[in-house]
Length: 127
Image (tube, rainbow, N blue to C red; front, side, top):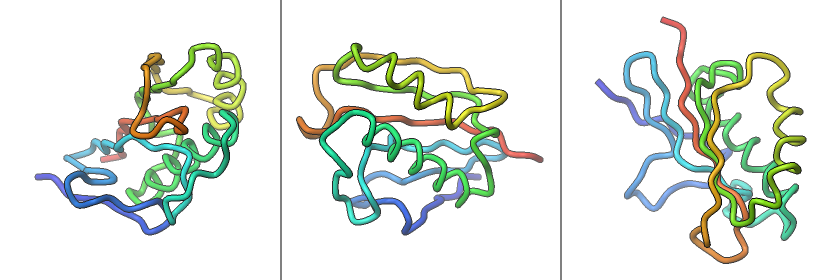
C-alpha cells in the first residue's frame, strides 16, 4: 500500500506527481529545488539553491515522520559539476553523522535555466 505525503511548507505540485510517497517503511521524495513554499527561486547562486533544496528535503522527511538521518540515498542533479565542492561543503552541514549513499550527476538543464540543482531522496522509516 502506498500513501501520498505532502506539506504546504514546500512548493506544491501540478497534480501529475507527488511531493513524496510512502510505501511500507520506505519514503520516496521527489526532486527538490531551491524554491520556497510559494515556488519562488530563493536566489540565483548555487549555494542558496542547494541549501533550500536540502531544506525542502528535510521538510518533506518531517512530514513523513522522518529525519535527515533516515535518508538511505540521495540523487543530486547539478547543471555544472564545478559546483560539486560547494555542494560537498553544504551537504556536510546537513549530514553530520550517518550520511546517506549519494549519486551526483551533471545535466545540461533542469526544468528552467536558472535552476542549478535538484535533489531527491529515499528514506527508510522505523517499523
